[in-house]
Image 1 (cartoon, rainbow, N blue to C red):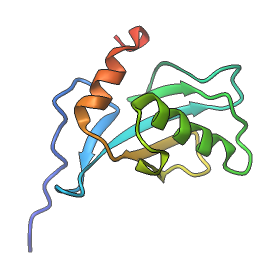
Image 2 (cartoon, helix red, strand yellow; image 1 turned 180 degrees about the vertical axis):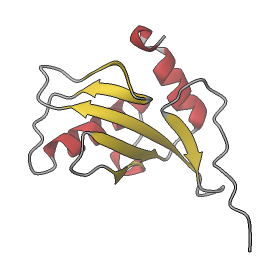
Image 3 (cartoon, rainbow, N blue to C red; image 1 turned 45 degrees about the horizontal axis):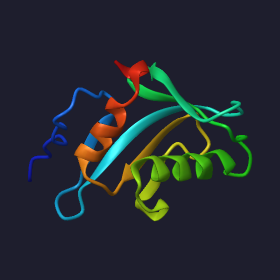
Length: 116
């Protein structure tokens, strides 16, 4: 029986990030804690190891999930189809698979002073 090794750590200090899969199908997974119905969409810090995001969308009929995917895609300058919600469809705690290079996500997170 083959052993299952844990996902390799990212070369970053971010507790909300990890790699899943194997090349060429490897992707970055980001854990996010969402607060819907905010006045504007913004990162506000950490919540239990997840990135805390206030989201300017209601939690109705998937609107918040779609808004989160659009926001992340725009922030990372990737197509929205490269951002997939893999866990948390009806929960505040979400996991998104990002089809992009880990260093792009790392550089993006470094721009937020609230995360330091």
